[in-house]
Length: 77
Image (tube, rainbow, N blue to C red; front, side):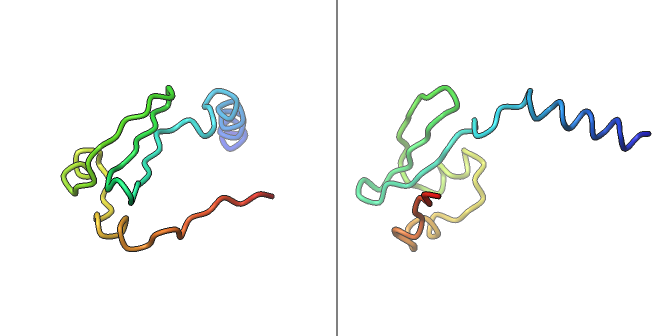
């Protein structure tokens, strides 16, 4: 019975919690800056420093952003 209630709550939350509505952080190698796109559509630019990553709570080292250019791409299915 408890498992069923948890299942119903989880199913309900799929309609309440919006999908893909989180902040996005991307790296601009040409300008050596981070681009932050917030949930509301606001776009801000930050310097690409480890201090900025630490302030955002990102635990990935700055070197990881610089070392792999063009390794992400969109999949069109």
